[in-house]
Image (cartoon, rainbow, N blue to C red; front, side):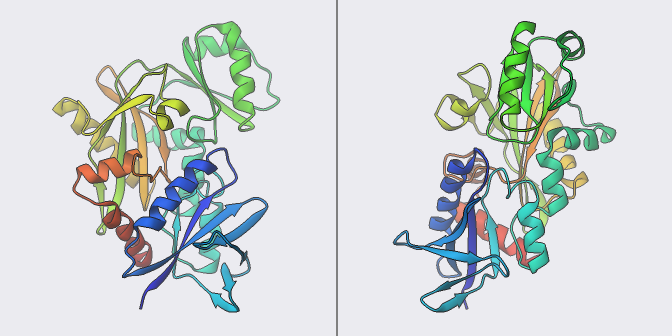
Amino acid sequence: MKKNIAIIMGGYSSEYKISLKSGNVVYETLDASKYTPYRIHIFKDKWVYVDTNNDEFTIDKNDFSVTVNNSKVTFDCVFNAIHGSPGEDGFMQAYFKLLNIPQTSCDMYQASLTYNKRDCISTLKPYGIKTAESYYLNLGDKIDADTIVKKVGLPCFVKANKAGSSFGVSKVYKKEDLQNAIDIAFKEDDEIIIESFLDGKEVSVGVITYKGATKVLPITEIVSENDFFDYEAKYQGKSKEITPARLTKDEETKVTKVAKQVYEVLKMKGFSRSEFIFKNGEPHLLEVNTVPGLTRESILPQQAAAAGISLSDLFDNAIEEAFDN
């Protein structure tokens, strides 16, 4: 008997358009002989099932069901394609845990921890994971530009602490421009992180649970046409994504080991994509994404293809892993 799969997409953050694209790719790709997919749009003002005619049916949040033509539909598993809140920060994971519905991403705590860049970095540092020098600010804190520059140097990156797809990120070259960058970041989040600039090769490493084991996918090198790997570079073709990355054997061995270590130390499940920059030959962790892009152009699907894993197999494995946990 075919399983009902709810593909949740959209979300409450600036990333909702990208999430809708990811969710629709999952919807179009899932094996129709095994699964009946349902597109579920999750927005602040509505949770709805969207059928093939684009008609909307309200989700009952009490048990995450939907009634269509007087027939109640429940779901065997949830495929999480929400980038940002509430799908990547732990809220949906906790909700489905309470309802005892399997879901494809990591658990609540891991999602919440990795979504908070500075908490994630703080957790991993004792394990020897190298990161950029950083300075933290909360909304309302006194801003001392001299102290910030003394700690992280120039140029530096100002980032919203809990946001993705490079929203709220600025590269700052002059102390006088810090305040404007901080204001931009605070539009996305009430916590920000300011990091030293790491000048080196940037790579993205996909790590997944595949057939019951941790699997590091072929590495992608990021070469941005812009000043850094910003929104335009990620989603509007302003970058080259080279898979497999042009790394020495030593670099490849080091970053593969560290990416796997991050995944296992954090007790991750499902998909993850970690970003690193090499400085003095050593990989430095930038961040961990737990609901990475899943469009055909996205990095993780590119990496899976290089590993000989089709999109259909990638998504099917995610659902099977969810059922097994």
